[in-house]
Image (cartoon, rainbow over all chains, first blue to last red; front, side, top):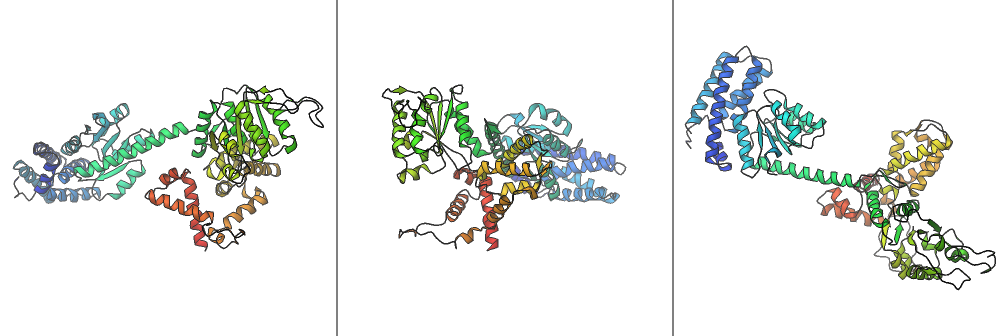
Length: 112
Length: 470
């Protein structure tokens, strides 16, 4: 596993591999990458008019990000969720950063 | 548990759900994954999984609704709720709605498996308790009223003993229902259609006792103006219940022993030997072994009679039976007296539960009858309780175990009494020791001590109250 990916904590990935297997982890990371890709698409299609769809998509990505060690993305998602729950909007630049971080996380996963 | 339909995982994040399934399968546990709530709901009632791992935030419905549905329908499914990190209030709400446990994400394999094993163990314990409750869940038995665990044990013994001819020896405090017990044994026996003859050994003058049991012929003694059948003859083919057998004198005890051993007897004044096929039941409110040790009861007769011992619990050891029995008496007495009583106030219920009932069921019946005769209402309130009952009840709550230590000791005529300690102290130490051995688990300690858990809790509470008053 490549340890130079700050968007992914490889210790988490290594721990998952020890608890399951290398093969299982690779399969799950592929699923995570696919899920993130779909999530970004839903986010971009829903922003800014459909906050409920945004919330659902963010929640799904939050689960997996926490599970697969994507701490920076998780933090962004949590912030965005809190804003939406409070009835506030996500600023366009923050939304852009979020989706960009999502893409970087996908690249990092694919390089593992 | 290795069937895929035993464990459901309901989680909308595909990689997360697959990871959880991998954790389980690496431990030999199969599972079925659902990515939304509705598809899971369709399968839950038909497949009845043993465990559900449930994410609360699903894309189509709120996971709480699944939890509520399972709880409301009483489905035997343990739900482990997956909660987000830091959402304690959500976890608390989930537990309130019946979740068996919760697990905070992200979690690793060992955390998941430990949680699962705890839940499985809890389920097994619940099932065991349910099995016992189903087996022991009798509100009454023959004329007995009561569903407490100590009485379920009595019912089970009667079930087993009734069908045989084995002699039953019933012990228990006065007023605990020894005659009811004898009646139940007879009614459940193959001899139910034959006579049940009851002799109260304490109520019969000693000089007439032998005649009561064995009968006499005309002229056998002064006053024997006709032949008379004794209980042995009247109970032939049936059951003979000798209540208060401890009152029987030693000479008669030896004749009774011979009768039991041979099945033959003679009427007083008769040389002819008669045979009788009898099933014997005996009862005493004394400690039979103490009576044997004191030489007041023949040891050989005791062992001949004590084939199936049944000890009837005191009323204060029967959990909430006092309320069931009180309700029965209230209904019966109200009918008989033409009164409208239907229930007890919460204060009266509490008083009944706290009271020791030294006179057991007989005392309870007297109290209820007193209330019904002297009052008119549809509900029994505290002010209706007899003064003597209220006085006894207050006196008992005032007596703290600590004060008994200072009570004057009875004279012992020079015997060494240094080893004798107050009974309450011995009892307290025994209970505390059992709880310690059971690692603080009161129900387990109670089971080993042969009493109900509520008895232990009541005693612990009374000791706490007493200690706070010292």
